[in-house]
Image 1 (cartoon, one colour):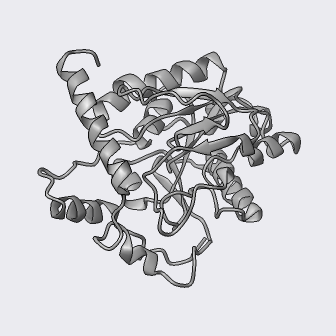
Image 2 (cartoon, each protein chain N blue to C red):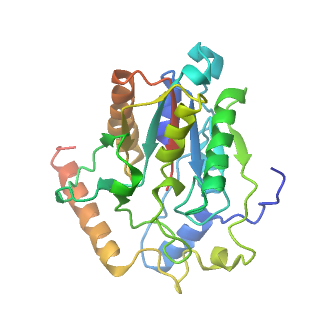
Length: 122
Length: 168
C-alpha cells in the first residue's frame, strides 16, 4: 500500500495513508501517514467506536492539507487497551498469523502466481 | 498526539523471525527508498471542501449476497461503488490480527460512512464514485507496474483530487 501511495503522489495526487504497522510504512517512506498503535486490522479507528473513527479520519484530512514535507507521521492519541500483551503475541508460535486454511490458500496463490509469471502471463 | 508509542510492534523484525522459524528461506526484503515523492496540497488548487476524495484499501471487500467468484491468481485491482451502505460490505481478508480484533466493523478500516458524512457537513467535496481494492503483494514490481497504475487510471477517470489509503 505504501508503494501505491508513493505512485499516486508521484503522479500528482496528494495521499494520506492510515496504518498500524509503523515500522513497515516508515521504512518504505510515504508522503503522509496516520499511525494508530492498534492491532493489524483497524487503521481508521476501533471497531464500533464511531467517535474515535471520525477523529482518526479527521486527523488524516487535516494532515492531507497541512503537511509541508514528505514523510510526515501523525500518531493518533488512542490506546488499544491498557493491556499491551497483544503486542508480544503477534507473529508468535502461540498465535500463528494465518489459520491453516488461510495458509493453504496463501501457498496455493503463491504457486499459481509463480506459474503465471514463469509463463509470461503476468 | 504526544502519547508514547515507542513500544509499537516491530513487524519487520517479528515477521523475519517468525518465517525463519517456520522454515522459509531468504527473508522478505521490505521496500525502502531514500526519497519520498510529494505533491503539496496547495497544488490541487481548490479547498478540501471542494475536493473529490478517492479511497483505496487492502481489505479485500465484497458485497454481501453477490456471487462468489473464484480467486483470480493475478490478484488484480478491482473496485466497488462507494455508495454501497457499509452493512452490505464485508472483508474477505485473513491477514490481520485475528486474536486481538475483528474486521466486523467496516468503518474501522474503510471509513466510507464517515467520508459520506463529511461530504454532508461540507468538510470534503465528494467521495469518488468507486473505491479500489489492492492486494498486499509479495512482488513490489507487480504493485508498481500493474496495480498502482490501474488505481491511478481509475482515479483520473473519476477526477479524484486527493486519496485516502487504508492498509489493513
